[in-house]
Amino acid sequence: MNPAEIRLTDLTLTHARRPAVHHVSGRFAPGSLTAVVGPNGAGKSTLLRALAGLHRPETGRIEGAAGQIALLPQAAAVDRAFPIACLDVVLFGLWGETGAFRAIGRAGRERARAALAAVGLAGFEARPAGSLSAGQFQRLLFARLLLQDAPVILLDEPFNALDARTAADLLAMVHRWHGEGRTVVAVLHDLDLVRREFPLSLLLARDCLGWGPTAEVLTAANRLRARMMAEAWAAEPEPCERRDAA
Image 1 (spheres, rainbow, N blue to C red):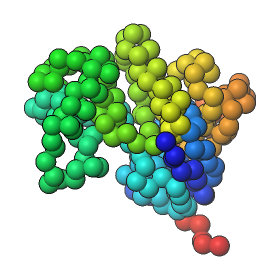
Image 2 (cartoon, one colour):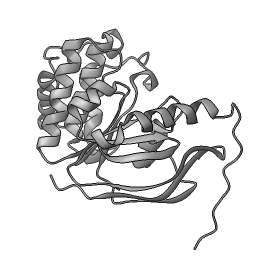
Image 3 (cartoon, one colour):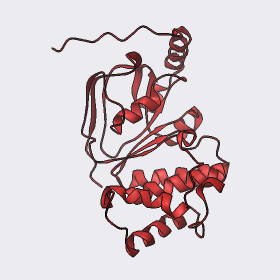
Image 4 (tube, rainbow, N blue to C red):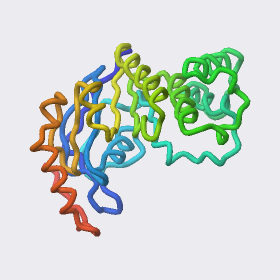
């Protein structure tokens, strides 16, 4: 794997001009493993969507990520009511290779079956995705990531509401990706997990309160500051002012 450096320059993200992320600058080094943490409403998921090209910056730039990224959205954001078999969900991971019109051949289907087996879902090919438990469904989404085979992987709350065994299995996969030289960025809430498993952290409270080695970022002072900032957020924040170009 040879992922590019991802650089943020004065990045501001908004929803209907209401602030979500304020003037953040920094870099995700190639092959780094970073947790994005912060209070609810801090802009963490919005940042991941922007990195994936799904949320347009209000101001500033994101450089270096185009065409290299696979995104795992929050499970709650995925419509599980649509009638689709597990194998077909995984095959969507080949979209970047096949596009909308090229047929997926035997080799692609074998890759999808191997991905299901790698996450502990061998034999689930024909099962409706909507019939899976929360843990099984998250394994299914990880199998789709395996087929995408991207140099940069973005994970939005990947271990939320999972049993301990499933969380441990998927965490091992995250470390395997990191060991292969991929850049991995994960939104997480469990700070004990972050301290144990993620060497780098980005602490957001709409503003960046720290970005670097986890022990230096997740200090008591920084966490208190993030909490106090969140408590002060207005229910209807003022529109974000544009900065004039230099």
